[in-house]
Amino acid sequence: MALLIRNGEIVTSRARFKADIYCEDETITRIDHEITPPPGTGVIDATGMLVFPGFIDPHVHIYLPFMGTFAKDNYETASQAALAGGTTTLIEMCCPARHDEALDGFETWMAQAAGKSVCDYSFHMGVTRFDEKTPAQLREIVRRGVSSFKIFLAYKGAFGIDDTELYRTLALARELGVIVTAHCENETLVAERSRELLAAGRTDPSQHHESRPPIVEAEGVHHLMTFAQLTGAATYIVHLSCKPALDEAVAARNRGARVSVETLIQYLLLDKTYAERPRFEGAKYVMSPPLRDKQHQPILWSGLSHGLIQTVATDHAPFDFATQKTLGRDDFTKIPNGIPSLEERIKLLYTYGVQSGKMDLHTFVNVASTNAARIFGLYPRKGTIQPGADADLVIFDPNYSGTISAKTHLMNVDYSAFEDWKIQGRPVCVTVRGQVAMRDGVFVGTLGRGKFLEREPVHFV
Image 1 (cartoon, helix red, strand yellow):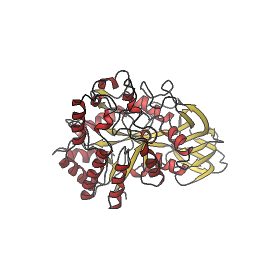
Image 2 (tube, one colour):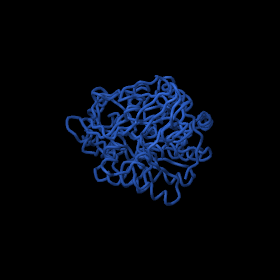
Image 3 (spheres, helix red, strand yellow):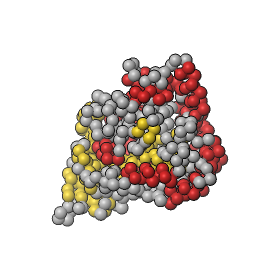
Image 4 (cartoon, helix red, strand yellow):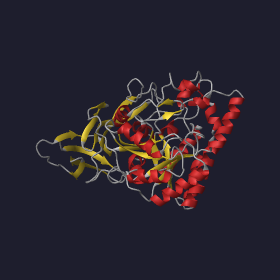
């Protein structure tokens, strides 16, 4: 059925104006004033509302075997939670174990989403091993529509790759025109510092930060940038958390490296004192890289406003506090890493970014949607509002006031890292390719309607 969204204020990365949006055959076909729809058209009155392009989370974990357990969400729960928060496209990290074949891992991850997701989705293909079989398998995965890889310079013995594998992955990516997303920490430094801390009896969640302080992340970025410059590969640094790491990325960019930077909503709003909470409560806030001193937050906000940082993601990785985080009660290295926030990213970014004056609406749309679409080969199908784009639209009430709580969220996890935080503004209606999928936080769409988004390799500057 065709759909008309009437009287809303459209906001994109570059424009802001009042107009009607007419959608049919899953796409936006017309934007104009006072459109008269054909009989049978569904009509939504968006008077007083902002209308954004569907938001894109370029870094999530939904199916994730990790640290002896599995992330709690599946595609039904996670994609509905995403829609409730205004996110209509997910890019998941496909992370096979080091002993698994890449192509088998890709097919496993695809099977988790197909017929279950209510969002559109794609993957970054994890390269956790590079041997004689790997190039052919990665070429096939790229042929099937994945135009980004994921590498870990951390998690030694699990996902992490060595320098020879790093060089060969980047060289292949350069040949194929594939962008390489990278977790940047020095795995040797993390392993050695963790060993020393545990030997000294320092086992609580707060020690996670001490095992990987900012200099360890900065060294990981510097290391990646050296290899990226030598190979000419395009790179994307995931979950950057601190000034020293950002300084390394910007310096490399100024030297000619092709690098984009992502930060997370958690780093913008939470600091390491949360991971220092007593009675093991700090375990809720253990992630890698860890939450940092509050002094880094203004630098990250400024980086977003000035274009030094391109995207805000979540690294969504939900593990229950009561039954999973407790695996590390006597050893911080065994706490499953992750702070779930897929559902809350947009509401928090609007409240504490736009409403607080840290960013304008166009920057908000850029870092939460458009830039990710451009970097990962989805623009202009996704990330904007214009004729020919997919009709992924978020009707947003800027006057809404509410409170975040695990009691009401749709994520399949037993706590919220933002429990009792106030929010100003929320999505009230979300469409996916022209179909209304979420109203007032209630899913009203079609299970399994989400599509796998085939992406062409993109060479970016």
